[in-house]
Structure formats: C-alpha cells, structure tokens
Image 1 (cartoon, helix red, strand yellow):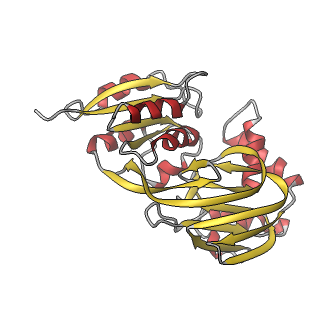
Image 2 (cartoon, one colour; image 1 turned 60 degrees about the horizontal axis):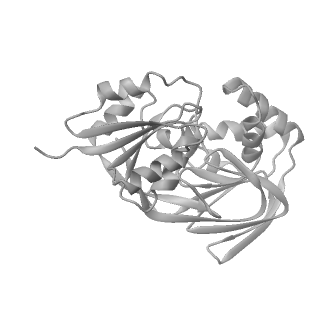
Length: 294
C-alpha cells in the first residue's frame, strides 16, 4: 500500500469573519484518508502561522492547508517559499484574493475537495524589501485603507466601505519615482501603485486583470490622480476587469521595480498594512512556491 502523504492544516481562529470551531471535524470528514495523513494545528497568540508552516517544512510534510484570510495565506507562504511543501487554501477571510485568483471555491467543503484531487503546480512569489507576498503589494490609497481598517474594532464589508470613504476624504496623492528593471525611470504623483503577482485584491476587485502566477513577472498598476467626479468610474473598473483600460492608469510588466517617495508612507503586502517607508524594492521570484489548484 502506498504511504499516505502528510498534510498540516493550520487554522487561524483570529482571521476573517467566520467561526472555525467546526473546521477540524469538517477536514476529518472530507479529506481523502486513503491519500493523506492529516494533522491539525491552531494558531495562538504565541504561535504564528509562519511558525507552524516552518515546522511543516522542517518535518518534511507534503502540504500545508491555510485556513483563514489573505494574511493567514501570506504567513504560511512566507515559510514555504523555496521548499517542496505545497500550500492549499481554505478561504475564510473577507477578501480571499489569492484563493479567488486560483479559482478555489469559497465553500469550505468544495475547497477541501480541491486538496483531495492532489493537483499541485509551481508558481511565483514576490518580495517587497525583506517581506514575502503572493498576491499584491504596494503603496497609496489601498495601503492607507488597510492601515485605517486594521485599527477598527468592527469588521465587515460595510465598515470597510466606511473606512474607504473616510480615507478618500483626506487623501493626498504620493509623489514618487520608480525604476523598472533598472532601465526606465518615472517621476509622478500617484493615487495607487500596486505590484501584483495575482490578478486581484480580493472580492473580485481586479487591480491587475492579466496577472499570472507563472510568468515570472510583476504586473504593475499605477493609478494616477483623478477628479472626484470620476471616482465611481475608476473604482467600478476594478470589478469589470477593465482598470488597465482607464485613461488614468498605466501598466507595466517587470521582474523588479524600485520605488522612492519623498515622504514616508504606509505600504501593504497581501492587504496587511506595514510600517511607513520611503524606499521599496519589489521583486518577482519565479517558480519558488507550490500551490494545490483545481
């Protein structure tokens, strides 16, 4: 009899909006035990997702199952890059950007069935300075929203929209210079500058509609300042996969981009706000991570 492959399911009870007490039993009921040997680990205040994923690498697991939102996925991915351990996603967050790009079902049972098919593909990951991301990273209006939203006590779509309006009311474009693959330099004011490995932020908001996880390149979307009356048009274009066609948007493809701002600004990786910085280097690393896909 063929030896079963070991999977570690990392459940983050602090992630997303849904309760996860039933997830261990759901995994136990649906996972194909003829193929896999399953171990469940819970994230605690003292034990991070990345710690558990690093343990899976050290102990030679076949795969890690990230149960949570984009931050949980990022935490697991950051420990799995460069290893042979594949990452599966059971999306439980508010955006689920990478899961949606990979066409992982939002239904937990169906997401587990994807794992049972055992279809693994090699994909790219990215770094922003010394931090890993798999979906998007950047600076501007989106990062400011992420920073403000993270400080709210109440979550959910309505509160996210409220946060976006509050940020927009006082937001000023960022003056920056950016150098693409060491050759072309631009200097301008930007509303958003996003470096995408996958196509969307989450919730089917496509910031880089043509991005691929397997082309070895970043898809860079630069949204330039626009009039308030055009806010609905620019925002709506994210949900119609047409942001790259907007006259206020420039797009580039590159292996690396270096960005410098005149003043420190908050940035984000996979929707998680980070500290304020003035310089960042974003690099795509081809074929450095494995994912369970449909």
